[in-house]
Structures are given as C-alpha cells and as structure tokens.
Length: 194
Image (cartoon, rainbow, N blue to C red; front, side, top):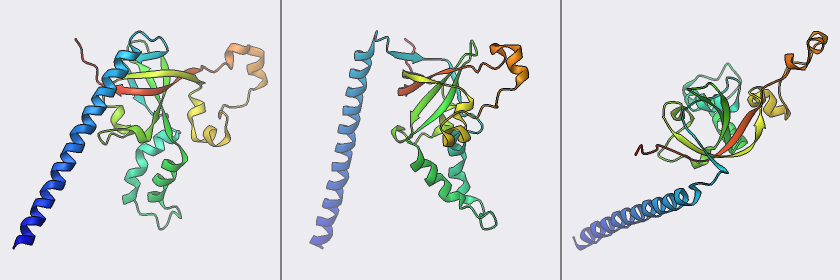
C-alpha cells in the first residue's frame, strides 16, 4: 500500500507543479503585455486599427486554410487528392496569412498579416471575423486584393488581367488597381473601453 500513497503524492506534486508553471507563464505574459502597451503608447510606427471587419479573399491561401481543417471528414478516394493532408501542406507552406480588413465606417481597406503559429486560446482564422478586435500593426508594404490570390501567390505576382488596347486608349485611370497597405499584426485583442 505505501507505493500507492507515494504514487498519489507524486501525481499530486506533478499537478501542483503544472499549475505553478501555468501561473508563472500567465504572469510573465501579462507583464510582457503591460510593458509592450506602455512602450508603444504614442509610437506612430505602431498603428492601432479599430472597427475592422476581417475577411479572407475568396481565392487566397487564407481562405483555403479556413476550410481545410474540416476536409478531414471528406471522402477523397475518387478525387485523387488527400484533402486531409492539404491542411498540413498549407500550414507548412506559409508562416503567415493575409486577411482583408475593411473599416465598417468608411469602407476603406487594408491587409492584415497574421503569424498563424502565434494565435493563442485556440483561435483560428475563422474566429477573427467574428470578433471585435483592435489590431496593433506595423506597415510593411502594399499589395492589391488580386495579389492575395493563390495564383498570384504561386507565380510571385498578381493575377491581374492583361491590359487591352481599349483600356490603354481610355487612359491610365481605367486600368489602375488600388493598392492596399499591408500591416504585420503584432498584437490583436479586445480593448478596454475606459
């Protein structure tokens, strides 16, 4: 019987140790977050993006990544493609995913790049569209919405249609694409209204 007691004590000790590590980890995370927020206050390089509706462009890798986890249940024998492994392929192909952020008040758009591995609380891409978040981002470039598509991603360019002679005659405004600012998201979260 003494071995059962020792085993139970050891098991309880491991649980206490895990709980202690979890509390320490949360305390460190909160301290780092508090320090970050204090440090970037007033820093014009960090843009706070509020009031955005976040979506994935239809033909983008982010759009595909939103659905591939559910493809595990699809029958794939007749397709010749293992849809369950497609999710793994997309995960290893990209370290970040771009979503279009549209300001609900003005309709202006930007692109938000998320490091997929940095999500906490088991959030996924589909969750971001349902939440009212404030995004802390840093401007890293620009792109078009067409540039977010899988075809453009694979070819390294945009999948814009070739310019026709009529479009050239109508002037440069007829073929100009709108470039959207691209922000790497450093932090996304719920902001306390106070």
